[in-house]
Length: 467
Length: 60
Image (cartoon, rainbow over all chains, first blue to last red; front, side, top):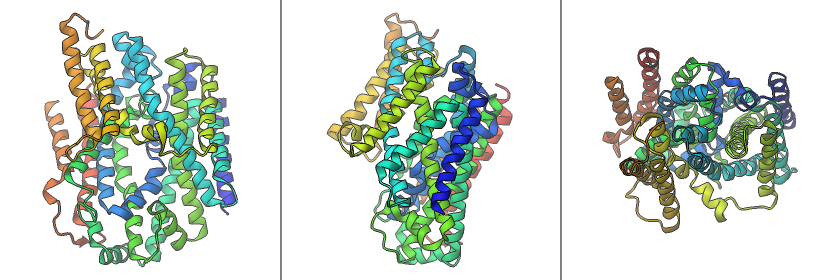
């Protein structure tokens, strides 16, 4: 059953990629951005599926098992409110992209100031934090395949999954990425809805399931939670982090270029919180319900799988595992394509063949990362994975100023990005106090201050602001 | 335009919900009241965004 589901799922992805290839020319705009032709449905699903990773599936339930329902609040509010950025940033990015033919985030930021250095810096920062994240997705893929098929090693699972991802990205470019995101988004939602429906039924209804968990550990239902994690400052930190960080993911930023018209972005903005309002609640509830079932949960990250394995029929378990793979792959394919687009267009020119070569190299890198058994929590790669969100949120002030602030200058943006990143790395090394807030918020504030100070200082010394 | 920005700020402030922290929790049907509040707020965002689309975005 599970073999059939996974093989069928991979085959469907490759077929979508092949179909996308028939509709895709070799022109850079078509391959990298699907000719800027995504309608409301595709854009909405691709934004959602790209943003929802395997963590949304497995990690939310695990975190809720440990720290309670607060996990729903910190994730749902900020991520939903972030959709306002589709208007504030997305509409402008789409407009500028169409007007000047931009394909990458770096082109937009560097383009306004006619600064090649700023373009490369933006691309460099985005790539620096996205490449390790891609490698972690490969590890996650191997892990899921190994859980599904214990006879298959995690390494082999990672190789096969990355090969499938690279296969459809190489054949169909952005169109394949977007179309597979629709397919994968539907699977993710269907899997989670099926899981909670069956588990809720098996536990005697949602109300009974909740009451059982509440009786065992009522602190899970309170704020700040059983371990006091969800403080007001942490809540506020996550709210700001998701609002400003999510659009700075290069794979999300690039999708703003792909809208056929503002209407696509408008529909996405309205539908996004509607999806999140219920979708994020489901894994969190399952994680909390586990406390009322008496299940032995050794690793909280496995709680969703344990619950589904224990309380649903085999087909639902298979569907959930495919859903987890879909969540992971829809993020990884977007990262792979966007990285290869940036590393090609911003460094070597707008050439589809170069980009495809970079795609293969990046996929190989991710696979080698798994094959050599690299610990994702160790070394420089571990550091980069740990600080991905902090490292990317630092770009937000420079991007916002590029789009809205006439007095912003190249030097202000450079100071903002470098200064913000310095805070991120220094905090990781020295752990200075952040007064209860996430370190990312301190870095974001520093980047904003440096942007204003740097722009004003450089304009006084004669550097021209906007062009 | 200013009133729309103000509305966005108000919604953002409502998202923090700092007035209900550490209060005694009881369940309303199958969720605590504050989770219903979060759920309602995310739905309110959708309504607000729809209004922004109709009243602001179309004009710009």
